[in-house]
Length: 306
Image (cartoon, rainbow, N blue to C red; front, side, top):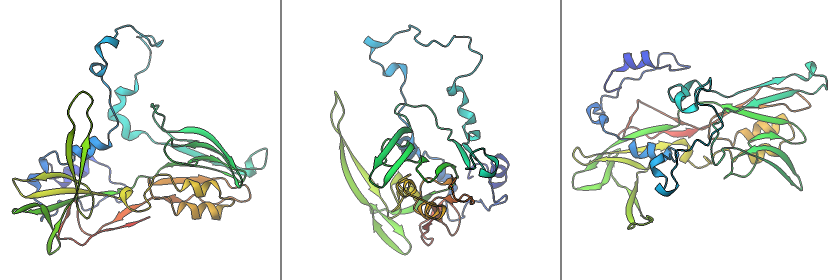
């Protein structure tokens, strides 16, 4: 935005569903300072672990072909589709019980998730008193995100919500740990960590936080600091955990109420309760904003909504 201006940014991007949002940089923000790699640390944290051939111990490296796929295979590998990832989307559909042979509705859900190790989904059948559900869930979270119980089935597709804000602070020239918020100075919270390194010395790091979230970049020369506030770091932002309530729902009303607890990520929820057919709810947490972005420390704070 600071480099190309709002008109070219609008031409190069699709801002749905608003069409013509006001995206000009807030005049209180010095756009010339935004060319630094402000989100480098944040993006590194969010990016998955990436392995390259040179990461393999030399004693185990080989040039032997182990894949059964011929070199002249008539398709491209997923790595060549990096520039097209934004076009990928999940899908689902439901057929009314009036059109099925059994008289019950039929639902199919196709979440377009990449194949990875560990897998992003695993199939499980959970059976306990008052609990009987089967489907796909996340390895680190209890419950089933996509599946069915004895009363109905449910699925989901991504409902994109902008749940991250970048905050820009003035820092105190006399004390870099102090940042200006509204009309006064506040002190960053600091958590000191020691990282164990195999074959090397421990590395000590200080993790800094403002009232809004982790400090991802400090510009000591210009007395600026940058922090990210994310809806998924708010209370109740545990991803997919609301599936525990969905797993025990016995009606559309109970399923809809369970969706009220699903804040992260934003999803289009679909379900096929056996006794009746209803519209599908959307769920997701987002930040209620006033003013433009990036956010200046002098603006009123935003709150979370779902």
